[in-house]
Image (cartoon, rainbow, N blue to C red; front, side, top):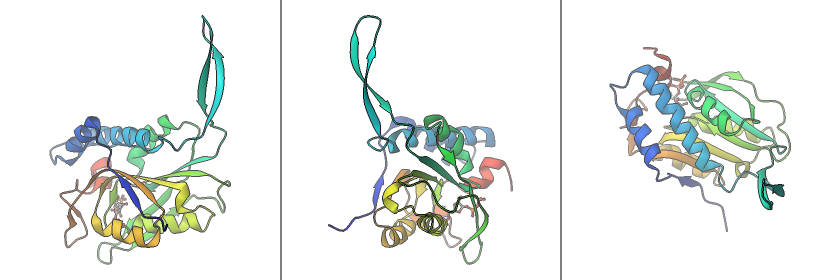
Length: 217
Ligand code: PRP
């Protein structure tokens, strides 16, 4: 059967709570940063379920021997934040996956064409074979920025099956574009919003995540 893009919206009260804080236009920058970081933590927790490889083991408690299971952190793991807004998720996701390598990609959407322009690419020429890759971008609007990043990863030997995307707000145009180009992709998002306005902003969305994270106009 042909793969179909999968998008999960975890039904979690903490995700709904921090999404409400992030959406509120009155939330000041420091609290907005906290909200984005918390969303990153809980979405990462959900996204790595059934995804991280584990090794069966046995441990000795103070009383007896018992079976145990450990995450196999020797397997290659990568985090790819899309700057700037993806930076807001990095620290908390790194706390969940402390051994992951972090490869930054900097993209800026052109305000008129809405096409992404790449100003930073710290991806290596090839990622380690069978790497698991978490791509971080809080906003999937037209989907252009994520698509650009997935193309960079594909050119470096990473297939969509190896990738999980963490977003906070995803819009239908992005999901449509991504499902055509990368049907085997898996996305975790706090919400799917209804539409884009004529400037390409997600409505209701949460505004410009990059500007709100860094206090820029
Ligand atoms: C915003 C947002 C996403 C991208 C989504 O970034 O943070 O990365 O646009 O739009 P798309 O799905 O239509 O590509 P922006 O270009 O404003 O840069 P910033 O993160 O530095 O603010």
